[in-house]
Image 1 (tube, helix red, strand yellow):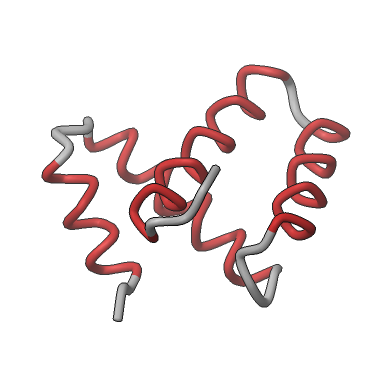
Image 2 (tube, one colour; image 1 turned 120 degrees about the vertical axis):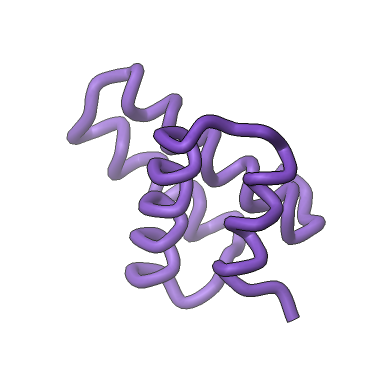
Length: 77
């Protein structure tokens, strides 16, 4: 079973910076705490929330983190 710990290992193998890894882990943790499942409806809801409350740079960073998590899970973006 794929876990957040193995996601962190996956990010490290991708040679991402510590700051990027920390940011991606925070984003995925937030998403999984607020949404029961990773599905299209929840992803669109989360994106809408981000776009309403954050600047474009932050939105893009959070979406990149979620996309990397989807890649790790083997799901379509």
